[in-house]
Length: 370
Image (cartoon, rainbow, N blue to C red; front, top):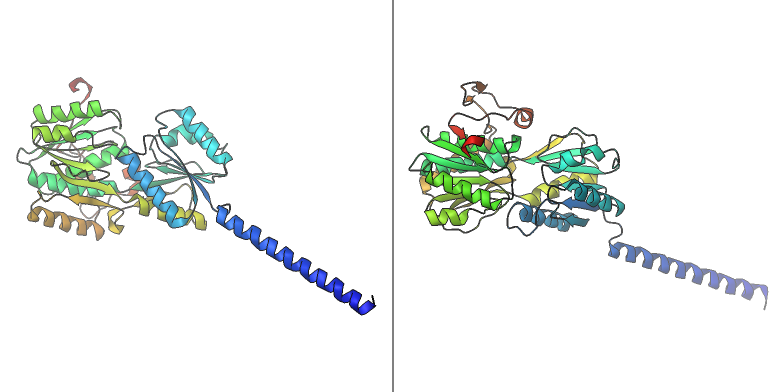
């Protein structure tokens, strides 16, 4: 073989090797893209059953929709309950699988995980309804109290007894915001109405919730009541006693339901996690999602609600959208103290750190009454 032919053969082999190498590289790259290995991994933890037809299910549906919108890999765990050990083990497992963001969707998870923050310093924890000041914790809250205010307008205009009921879980800042907002909505249209509140001590005790509903109806004459719990578990009680109920998390279609106070978790989790994936999240901050951008609202208003009531609700909704929040202008507590003055808007820090009071017209039953 002469030198020219020898060089040509070597050149052909070299080109063939390069082409095979490029094809193999392209195949591996394509396989990696299809396998999801490039995707962000995000954990999501629920305290209750993701099929509870209430808080947990609506949150699960929201994060699953956000996953589809943003194309990340989701690790979801439900039924943690109040077990710190189970929560820690779940976080540890998610961290080991490569999750660098974990959403703690229950308000009590933040206090359970705070002492472990240094151990998971490379993970961003998103804490619902929290005011944690830990470096790698990010707080997020829906302004669901704005929708509760609107539901109060409905209750205040439609009550015939002027006695309204509210079943609360825990008297913390989030729970009290809801009660006070509902009461302010009622009072904006009915100065004579009273709001009777019973706390159950739990978000997941249907027995106590139904006991509370029965007491509100039989002892206090409430013809409309609402609840801030995980599931709409007292609808049968409302139907049986022929009173009206205002639900939350999702419409039920019950004959007694006047409206449903809902949060668009798909939009919240999509927007929040999109910013995280872009690297734009500011830690030790609180991200609020409100009615002005349709993150919260009345997802359902029954045909039983008269047009004049719907019109007033719409008028109040527009007022909030224009910037005058629920906790604004003159507000006095049940002891007569002035908490907010005309033209003022209560700052968010007070809504989180200073909501241990109730507005006039709210009657909270204490331990001896329960």
